[in-house]
Length: 462
Ligand code: 4AD
Ligand code: MG
Image (cartoon, rainbow, N blue to C red; front, side, top):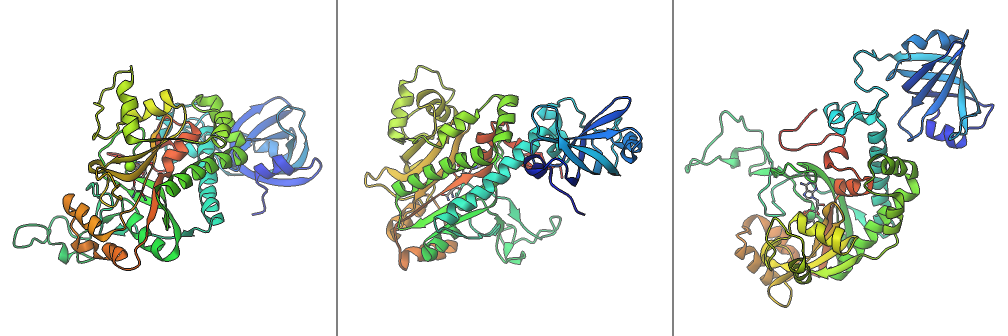
């Protein structure tokens, strides 16, 4: 089917040319001798105005052109007298592929609440808000690859099914093909995973980091970009059970290199959306008033604040504000603490480094003080933690010691320890939660509104 995307028609369309567009009717306005159709096709935030004159073939189709109908229009472009757009389309031939009954089609021209739209997840991409969000998401995904490819990072495809629990937090979705009503048991009465498909217990990955590390220890610098899964019972506006993560891993790098990469990366993402999605950002700014285009453009230019965990705790202890959760050296920062640092004190992204070892994962490198590890969290205003990363423990005895202290069984991780036995080197990396990035830059209040099919406790719509 020959068709021109509306994005291109609006930017490059020359008056006088004949063109065909396809899309969904946003609205119809009928007068005595003509009608206006507003058409959207998902390629841009903008819509194309179609003029239908009386006594033409398209006019005879109008009854079916209700909001939501899928149509194709062939016609001639002409200069638009209305302000805001260069061209409009004078219809010569119109085909209705599928109508939409105005009595039952849920998306009418009037605005809908995000809560209502969440209930019709399969139709919400047709709304202005979700069209904008998904185009911004697409731009960011492309910019992620561009950023790393331009720096010589190799895209590594780490598995979705895995036998390790990278974060050691036990938030795992088991993958099995057992008949759940007839589970085989061992002598101790425990489920016998040796009889399962893979011969051992497996689950959906919580992070591609450990596999990413062995790729980096051969390829130098790699990144992953794929779905990750956490059976975390968090019903918040920042948690999903299925989310996408980007995890760069660099050989011959320390925590300072890692923080530098994270900052350059986030700033490049800001620059990319400002450059490629100005209309989407303007729409979202006007609609939700959470983040402005000017703020995103400024973020792309401004250095991030860097502080140690110890200094962050000191700052929080001085705060006049009352917190719900206690602040004390050794306790993890809660999101109210993170937001106080980003929104109140530093008014921008903050990189917090060198956390107490007991609150961080087993693979993080012990600092010389013997109390903290070379960890970093990048905190973003409104969102809190957007990136978590670290320099990895590359010294075998220290890694073994830490794993023992944290009760991480080493039997199944000998391959991981091998990386410290053969050609070990300092290395570092981080994980960016892709939806948190999209949420930050679109200003959406709920992470469930930046992914097409959100998965959260008690929530699988499709
Ligand atoms: O801090 P996390 O748990 O770090 C890791 O998984 C490391 N293995 C990363 C690495 O060093 N390669 O998760 C990384 C990021 C968080 O900062 C957050 O942005 C996001 O993943 N994230 C979530 N996003 C949405 N929903 C959830 N339930 C998330 N849990 C983590
Ligand atoms: Mg983290």
